[in-house]
Length: 169
Image (tube, rainbow, N blue to C red; front, side, top):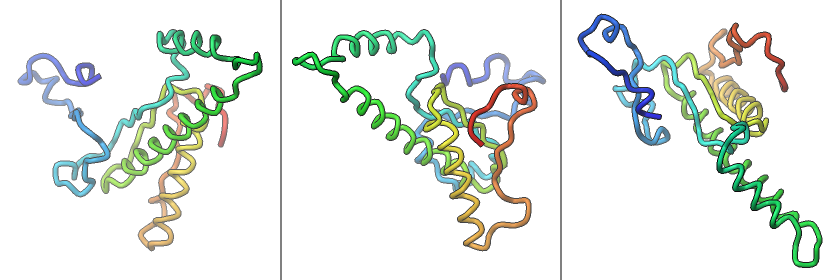
């Protein structure tokens, strides 16, 4: 992904001079929000690890589906419920990480926009993560006395997606 984000071409061209995106390859959770090199960061594109459940033609999914159909019954011919429980545990673990990453993004002082993106269809990795992060961030700012009117985090759908059906709040 880093290759896709890094600008190409002549760094001295007029178009390169207007680029205000500087991709960084590293562990986001280890980036300190108080580091001076991030003082002017205004927006974060957060694309955390996810289950990938929304990737239609994923080779990993084909292998997983094949393995699940072979092991869907136990030795006695009964249903094996471990598959479902394993998936639930994995999704919960990913959701916990995603929430941590989103709250970390929200802790950068001058950031006023965060784009949160996954390729998952599970609300536990999407709406639930965003809802929890917003509730915690806005609740913490109210109780700490830092919140100012109009300074709370809020969910804003881009105009280009307003016609898409939505689930959740």
